[in-house]
Amino acid sequence: MFSFRSRLSGFPRRTALGAAVAALALTATAAGGATAAPQPDKNPVKVRPGEAYMGVGQRVHEGAPAGDSGPGTLSHTDGVQGIDVSHWQGAINWTSVRNAGIQFAWIKATEGTSYKDDRFNTNYTNAYYAGVIRGAYHFARPNLSSGAVQANYFASNGGAWSRDNLTLPGVLDIEHNPYGAMCYGLSTTQMRSWINDFYNTYKSRTSRDVVIYTTAGWWNTCTGNWTGMGDKSPLWAAHWTTNHSPTIPNGFPYWTVWQYTSTGSVSGVSGNVDRNKFNGTRDRLLALANNT
Image (cartoon, rainbow, N blue to C red):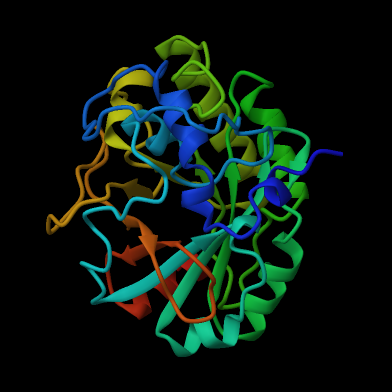
């Protein structure tokens, strides 16, 4: 079987996907915040189903080479720090990650209805034993199946929750579609229903409010500035900037987590890694983990 990862072996995740992102960006729908012109597609490689990760949609939207250092790189390293990872980071030394000051992590578990990240089980277990407060995330594919189907798939394949002082609620990663039309071919009304369906199903399975990871540009465009989730789901805002706070989507009163760069680094992880900041103290992070 063709291996996307092996074809690009030896390159950092973002650099390896640069050509693919640049090519996809030529047809991406603009939605505010674009900062770079599309780059020539010198080595056409498609992002394949199952290969998405947090922020890949934003890269597609920006049309920026995936290996470029974002403006927010290592600009917000005070406070409670975290990372998010998938199989693209390869083997991770979670003890080194924790010793480097990383207190929390969200780890890719699933995508759509048939893909489970092949490093999820290892990452999820090893992060726990290293003392990293961790959770799982699901990369949404709203064009493939209902929100309920995907929430059930997520909850059954890593997205479940337990009050053990080290498990965060699951995350719905819903962002610019890296495989096609920005809003997955759904109307704003259909997208709202899909997200609400996912939320209700996940909560019935786990008792937790799912965290929503998104960008202001995607949310405001694809949900039509929807305010319906602001009082239910904690917001994880993706905004790679040196500003003191991220731009947040309409309807959310504040951000709970901020992904401030896609090109960070941390001991124990090879290549680039997304860096995140929690909006509060460690005690508040533990409160989120324990639903208190």
